[in-house]
Each structure stands twice: as structure tokens, then as C-alpha cells.
Image (cartoon, rainbow over all chains, first blue to last red):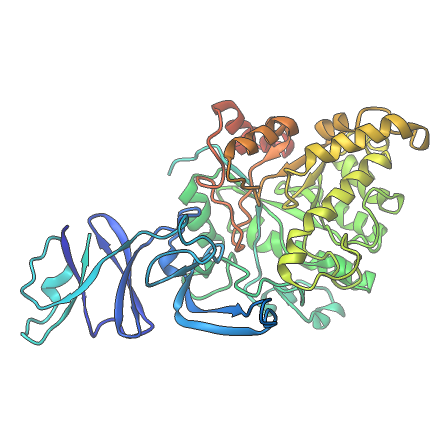
Length: 142
Length: 350
């Protein structure tokens, strides 16, 4: 797999995202609570730029069995990406849709954090980053 | 920039804000408009419009003719967009106010989208009328019938009676006279003064929104059983954004009952499905999407989609259908008819 440095870790704050081009593909890089994730910027539904969607949480409810079906809870704050077109919900961490995690998902890529001397397989704007031994990069593996 | 022989039969321009639309309403109504780009209830709680359709300067979705061209017409090579504004005129209790709102939206549409900012002529418009006072609606049709960019009359699907009933005939008479189809678009069902196909008020947006097709089914049954197409033999009706896959079983039922009950409605002289083929057109969005796409193709066959279905996107709304992704693969001829020819013929476009 080719490794691509797409940002410095400071560049994308928790809750933020950055859109990059890697090997001709548009990819969204997300920082969720300090961990980075990379999602292909194509919605499996009708091909919208899903990474431009809204980031939020989701409302869930309890169970019929314990009588809590009507009790609403808001959870996974900052972990849910909603497609900007029809609003389909996806977990940023896995790319999986909420309504059909096995069958419907956004393609995602492994992400690691590395130092400046990691081999760079892609054509990116890394040359604009200040070089320093403390600099840490978000690396997407395609 | 390549044109792909696509006509988008449902695009929604919006005033940028209250200020932009208000000035087009005549006095004294101008200062009484309370809402713009909202009907006050049954709004999508997630997002109403595509999040990426906000204009580059942060303006309301589809409030900018140039950006709409960039993001929709040029992006997909669309030849024409049929514009349907969202005046929600049918929800108001005051018939004069309703007529003023409709007139204001028509003046705004012409000024901002049709007579100006439309040098390529790709935008065509709808004459919004309020059915609360059919005589005023006729006046409004007469006011606009000569505008070369207005290609149809439109009314919201939300009403106080099925649209086949006689109190609406002055409107259909005018439409027939001027050769303008009359289009219905949902949005005010159960809102304001309007009845709704649900036996009461749906609790959630999803319940209401899915149920909108029921209103359109009601109106269609009304048109046919009231004999509207016998009375106005040249009238064309367009059902916009009411779904389409429900049509075949509805017509099977209607025809079966007509064979038994013709006595009650002797003015229905032909099979209901013939009236639909000759007088009714349906836009595709939101296209039904079965897991097995073959089933949708079978429904197209049952429906005569090749002759009556017309592509629409519903840009910039959340349930937008992409011209390239919403449909399963069609044979060339069917595709051409649905995406281009049916609308070209209906609206007399070059």
C-alpha cells in the first residue's frame, strides 16, 4: 500500500476535517477525539461528496423488553457523518452506515501517525510543511 | 459544455431572503408575509436542502441562477430546468392574500430567473396560482400566459377538496385555453387550511412526507372519475414529486371498478388508463428504489413510463435524485423518452 502524508496532526483539530486528493481520489480526513480517520469522499447511495456532510451524533432509544423504547438518548457525539444530500448516517470511525453496516458503507483507509521520514508514495503538498523532528504527520494508506 | 439531452422537470428556486421576495408582493400584502422558504410545519428535521447547495457567498440554496447552472445544469449537461417556486400559496385562509403571494412569486420568478439571468434560455417557469379563489387564479394565468418562459401553471397539492371537483374548473378552462399544463406539487398537505390524505395529522415529517403520494393518488382518481379530461379534452396534468410506482395497481383497481360503476360516472367514457396516457405526465423524483432493480423496470413497463414518466431531480432539496445515479440502467429509447422527449413534447421545447 502506498503511504500518503496528508496533514500535520495539528492541522486538523478534533471535530474538524480536511479534504485531500490522493492518487486521483477525493478523501476526507477526520479528527474524532484526537484519532484520525480517512473516508473516500463518495457516498454509496448516489455518489455525493459525503465528506462534506454534517458531523454530529445520533439519537437512539431503549428497548421494548425493559420498557424504555420511548426513552431517547443522544450518543456518539462527533462520530456520525451525515451525507449532505439525503442525510444517510455513517460512522466516521468505520465508514459503516447506521441503517445497514454490513451492506452499505463508505470506503475507508487505514491511518497512522508518523514522523517526517516515513516513505511518501503520493504526490502531496508535503513540501510546504515545515521540517522538524517533532513534526508528526497523518498518513493515509491506500 | 456538453448538453446531454436531459430536461429536469422539478427544480426549486428560492428567494435569497424575505427582503428579496417581499418587494414583489403588492400592497397591502407586502408587509404581511410572515415566512419565506418555510411552511412552518412538516420540515425535514435533518436538513431541508442539500448541504452543498448553499451558494458560494453563503446564500440560500438555489437562490443564485449562476450557481444553480454550475452545480446542476452544467454539471450534468441539462438542457432545460422547469422551475417550481415554493410559494405555499394554498395554505392561507385569506384568498386575497393567497392570490397576492402567488402573484408576488410569479413576478419574482420572472424578474430574477426567467426574463433576466436567463440568456441561455434554459430556465422555464411555472405560473403559481392559489385555488382559494379560482377567479383570481384565472386572472393570474391570463397575466402570464404570454410570457415565453412560463410553460405551465402550478398549484400545491395541499387543498380543501380533491382537485377534480368543479369549483376548480375555471382554472382548468384557462389552462386548456392557453395550452398550459397544470402541475401539482406537494408541500401544503395538512398545512394551514388544507385537508390531507391521512385521517388526521401525521406525527413526524417522515410519516407526512411518505404519505404525500396518497394525496396525489386521491387527486388523480378525482380527475378521472369527475370526467375532467372529457370536459377539457386538451388539458394536460403533471404530477410532480408525488412518486410514480403506485400508478399501475391504482389504475387496475380504478378500471375494474369503472367496469362495474360506469352508471354512476357516465362521463368517464374511456378506460381510465387511456385518460392517463393522453392527459397525465408524472415526474420521476423521488424515484422508488427496490433492492431488485428489475422490479422497478417491470413497474415502468406496467406504467407505460416510456410515454408518461419525466425525469426530475428536485434540486436543491435533500431527496435530490442524481441524473446519473438515481435510475437503473435503461435501454436507450426508454432513457431518451424519460430524460428528454416526454418533457420536450409536453412543454413544447426546442
